[in-house]
Length: 134
Image 1 (cartoon, rainbow, N blue to C red):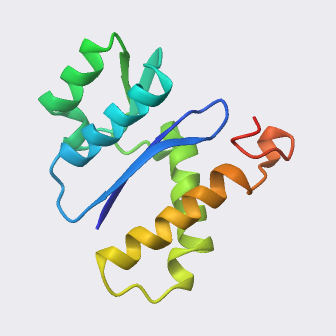
Image 2: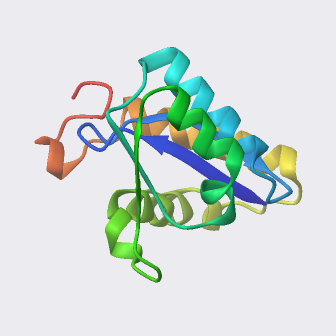
């Protein structure tokens, strides 16, 4: 399974996310479109250099929304440390604690954890506020 999340770096809030069983860019673009529709276009969007983020659909969506594009250097996971930290927290606090047998269960576990993350989980970088409160 493949997971994408659109995060606001200032508040660490996950604005949208999608889970897919393929690496096609569609699920990433769907998450991006949802985030833009709900929260407006960001000034800049940072991603890694995965094929979903270098493809025409992703680039066109950002360009048409007037968003500047930033990409991490090759092999530079620390360039996008907030998303990497999100993945680590999700795995340690939810994924590794469940016996996930299919995509439906994975989606439910992730959905529940993302709601917890945004509304209940305090962050030291946010002065112990939740992303929703920040």
